Image (cartoon, rainbow, N blue to C red; front, side, top):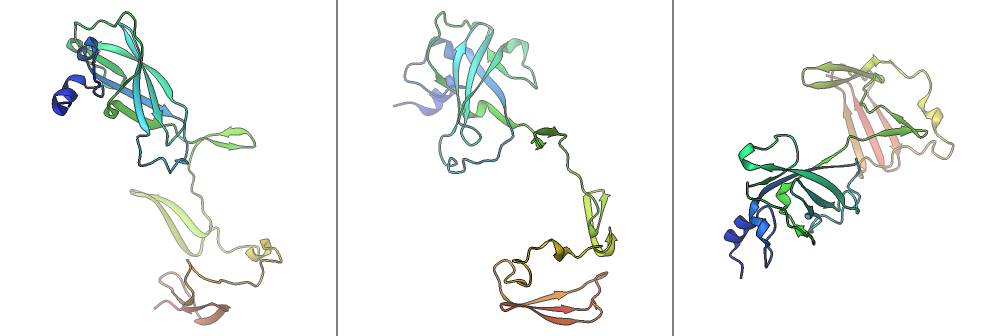
Length: 228
């Protein structure tokens, strides 16, 4: 049976193996920063499992080759090379490294895969890229005035202010004109799955000068009140 604390201490950054090679003890730490392409987590069923892993698959006197798998983002593994740093010389603060002692010497004939402790990994993703008609567009987020909505910047972020005649003002065309004949006259059937009575009560600067009751559909009714 493994002595967990002892073996983890000796083998870090590797996961314990039954017969650790001699050079294990000379590699003190590894940091591996890997960047994947921007992607949604489409493999959501791969959450509660061992899907983020890394292995040492190549080793020389000056570098190590690491294979990284992150199944939530892509099936194919990525390979990166990390350079050796001797612990008496310090390590880079922003780069990958394999930290060794001064007595480290790479094996003459390296073979196999040795799994690394997941805490050696720093996983990042690239910023998303937008394409239109197969042309790559600059990435950015833009807020613009809409009908009855004005956009402004404040100290904490973006303020969206909705009021009558704010922004671009009232619609110049009937928005219902964009509906097809099969969509007209249907009204609201529910709001977020709820039906019955809905009350809309205005607060400044919303004004409903003539409170009205409207039968929006057979399943939902709306009462509009004036601002107090």
